Length: 246
Length: 324
Ligand SMILES: Nc1ncnc2c1ncn2[C@@H]1O[C@H](COP(=O)(O)OP(=O)(O)O)[C@@H](O)[C@H]1O
Image (cartoon, rainbow over all chains, first blue to last red):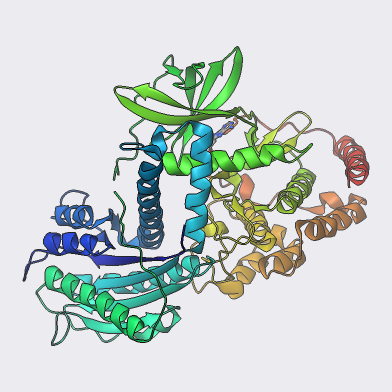
């Protein structure tokens, strides 16, 4: 199997969108374009699970072919990593199941194989997860209520970069914040293999009342396309993986 | 994706798990524990007690089985519980993957130490480093090394590890870890699987022993850890080893093992017992401990204890040298 690039959007938010197009629809669009959308919903300290209107968090991830998780801010570091890595494995697993269908016939999945064969397939999944290149666009909600959570978000992202950069495959991270000052999203960090430069970026944050999650996601999609066409112009031979996980 | 954590929760003592492929049958006796990837049960199959892990996450369970199979190929060594088989259990129309392994019986490291003299801690560490060296030589790094994953079986006391969920091929990214024992978390290195990753965790196990409820990360880095080491009297005697293990100065587990071995061998004078009883771990029980024994430590004569410990230790050193 060729070595490709996995593309993900990681949306970190603490609430419901209240402005612009439906983020669930945009996430479906992303999935069609081979970009997985993962969502982490952050609860405030005194908020109980389920109390919050975070159902949207699940809906976006489900339609974006990704994973969602709702957590308190103090569990964020582990969650950011878990979600990103699980989504990677899931995407790879989805791709491999597709290949298996080609080989074994309709409806055949890894789970249908006898345990020994399954082990061999899993080795391929593991190896692929280690070698594959990864592009993660992180989209952080910086509306007023997120204010006290941003230092934790920042720490979690640095931690994510330590984990992913311990892999053999290459990584590129970009961080965007929404709502932006004038446009839907503002760039904090453009595609970069490290997130260390993140330290100062969250300081200058605008805090408004609207949460335009849908428009922000749409902009994020654009950024992947722009990047891709730039690479094509430069004659980059980077192959993209179009399939996405189940 | 199924996010509910415990779809296998309705397995109760007496339940019978039937393997779809092998048709082997296991009777659940009780739950041993559960973690991020599934639940482990004590079960009986073919007349013997086994540990049976059930999980709805077929990917990570398959990955763990791969590791266990590799480890059982390492000749002559028992690295991790031995693997028995993997199968699927068809239950209420769903196929639930599970695997069966050796049931490791024993005390957790910290509860074992509650009933023992301090020297045992050194012996256990030396055993652990020896096993790690073999593991590293076989091309693997343990990853999620922490007291919860260490059991002392026996007699004679022998350290065994559980939960190979973090065990990673050398050179790859560590699959699973626990923050307090992870050098990446403390800003002291990458999460690439190399021997020094495990040795860092060994150092943190020693620190955890002195700080049973662990501590929060403040500024992180060597600065903070050094401060905590210096603060606790019992830890200071380890500070040379801790410094080297935390800062990645040991090239191999063997090097650290030999360092500790020569330190303990030199200490054959009664200074062994100079340590006072002021150590905090006797007072603060570790909330993480699973099997706390309520056994009261019996006080014997001072001399008698020294004699026994010294003789046992001398035998142990001879034994270790014989196996190096
Ligand atoms: N082979 C075994 N023998 C005895 N107890 C075990 C065995 N494997 C696991 N356990 C018990 O089950 C608990 C949870 O298992 P573990 O493999 O750590 O699950 P997870 O990987 O999901 O955290 C362990 O902490 C331990 O107490």
